Picture 1 (tube, rainbow, N blue to C red):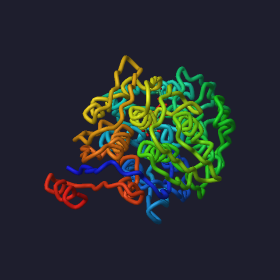
Picture 2 (picture 1 turned 180 degrees about the vertical axis):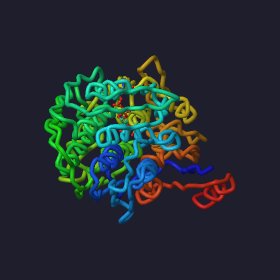
Picture 3 (picture 1 turned 60 degrees about the vertical axis):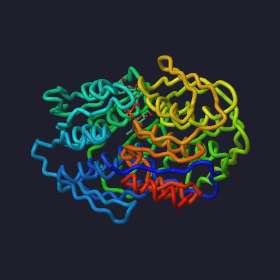
Picture 4 (picture 1 turned 90 degrees about the vertical axis):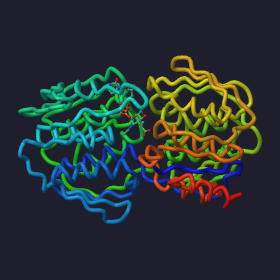
Length: 433
Ligand code: EPZ
């Protein structure tokens, strides 16, 4: 089983270029089904999640082609509308976001069957708000044999008030509503940059969506959508991960291909902690010299501090001076990495949805296991900041959301390799000394 082996203790320095946003790409790839014409989508991150979703779309009968590593062509005109459009368990077990196919299949064919998404890495992650939205548009939705069946004679626009701010349900309801008859209003909508990107993609296909990025999204259904060419926004969480990496290793890194506005919550927290963050038009530089300071963080829907950056900041704060508190207000179980971090000497106490962090001078290397995608990336940051050697198992989670993660870290001077066996670990140790 592939693992990372890392020798820590070096300042990361140099430049890194950020890939397209995974969580925008997943909604956009699913949205391409809403037209029979060809869609050309650029800046698609070449990660496991997008590869699996494209396989699921191809499995439905669409024609999917990689024009190059980051550009895909999707033509849903070859899907046979035989009323048995289903997304099998195999795909949705691998990535939750296959559930966006519910919204696009229902929106276009008035029928969809998708296996219930997995989850529980970071919380229960129910889909009640997705179902509430589909029902409001006139669909019958049942859960039978752990699959979601959604079907409608005709979808008609309606007013949907989200009980919780949810990225997935906001996107899924948009996908189902763009071809529905009449007007749909989504109130208490999520405002993340990837919501705006999906809405912009749909509008480039001829949809009529206003207000994406605010908490009220207004959609006027249209008869038909056409093909388009579109480029996905940069991934603000990948960017934030490298910002925290630069700060935690006392480095100096220029992070290219970002939208600084999307990083504001992260930049302001790192500045509060004593790091230097310099913003350019499409890049940010993060520098740190000496021990950072403690602070408080509460994760919130955008534009608040992103929950997907919570583990990476906890790792950085656990090396800072003083006591910090992190409150995780989005997911119920997103501190699973704390046990792994304790093996490196971190002092973190979890009480409910809060983590009380007592900063330590340094981490020492340890053998760890990645519990989920962002926690895995955070443990890599910890190992890079630690003295000595570390290994990290279950890196499959990291490969779901980060493209060439170890290669980008090596380009910044980090000592990290992907290895298969303990023998390879020994070879790495001998080589880097
Ligand atoms: C998306 O997950 C992202 N995933 C997550 O990123 C991210 O953490 C999350 O949004 C919040 O920003 C993708 O975009 C593929 P939610 P999603 O629906 O849509 C509750 C990563 O690391 N809720 O916004 O599943 C839910 O339980 C991943 O890239 C309901 O109660 O998140 C949670 O507490 C991890 N009912 C809160 O809302 C519902 O029907 C936010 O969930 C839906 C959600």
